[in-house]
Length: 118
Image 1 (cartoon, rainbow, N blue to C red):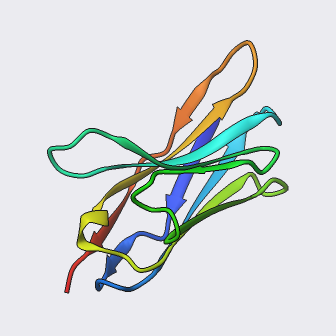
Image 2 (image 1 turned 60 degrees about the vertical axis):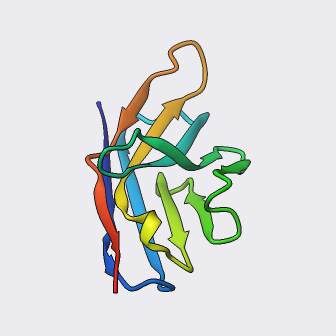
């Protein structure tokens, strides 16, 4: 059983910063990808950033140069540092853990709200 617990969301003014965390617990396969998705009201869930167990990263164009994804493999935790936040970054942010290999199992966190408003 794998569980993901997110934290760090909240209300921030435009131009501000937030740091999201997602801690995974349970039976974690060492070769995996941890990623952040977001879903705004009335919109589809979209990939924000991803990082594999070897440190390879990938970002959506809309967040490049503003967001940074990182991970601590010893703690099975992924972080998303969000700077220069814009109102259009407002969404529920979800953490996802995907195992690489034959099973390709995937797990989601419960989501954390990020609101960017003055």
